Length: 308
Image (cartoon, rainbow, N blue to C red; front, side):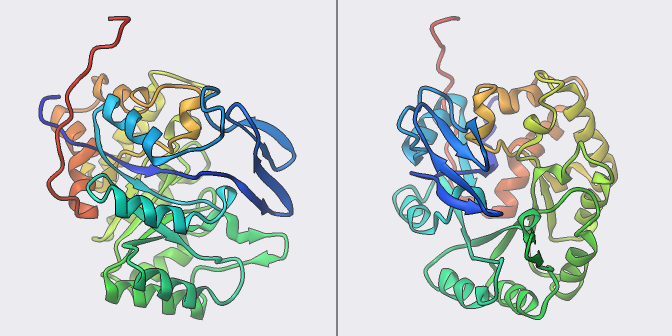
């Protein structure tokens, strides 16, 4: 699609995984594998032998797949990457918008958020599905949470958030949206689209400043696999409910490219007859360019590979 500047609204970077989630370790091993909460998983493609999921490797993938820019989010399973992501944003400001992350599983995160904002982060990520801990549930509408959201609203900081399956946390987030109507919110994993009541998350995007991004949609439809016709049908259904202007593509790089290539994580949308050409442009780049405020993005050339 000539001239289209593709933007990835959901990706991850780390140099090493070394953390504990729900009492279980997540640690980088070798050959792209990680110890993941009691089992060995192929976390990265096997050629990433040192386990480093670096910005430079991602940029090489982005350039080849003609992706102009990416939003780098965070997840507790990867550990806190704030320091590395600040370095990434400093080195490649025209290619990455990075999210800071606080320790939301215990009190005191408001002060952390204040420091992240002061240090220059333009977005904060909450992996809210991880707030249902063995020690108890952390709600999104607590006093400390609401104080943080009001601060983010005043400072024009974007909230990137993944929710638990279905409608479990939509009521809490709806309260946040009502209290902070100017807070820009991007809901990830396309509302956990293959789970029951996923459309309850999609409906939150009826609010003016709420968007839905599709990071992880290919692993959610992994049983169906490429060309992910079910995923495209879900995109069509969501667009019919809230408008294609409220939906953005995300890859969930790098975990998803253990099964498919990076280009395959979006070209199933390009090839689908179920979406109009203008809708594809909105979903793959124009919506994210507007929402995140990317400027002066470059159109990347197509490079033929040796199998063509």
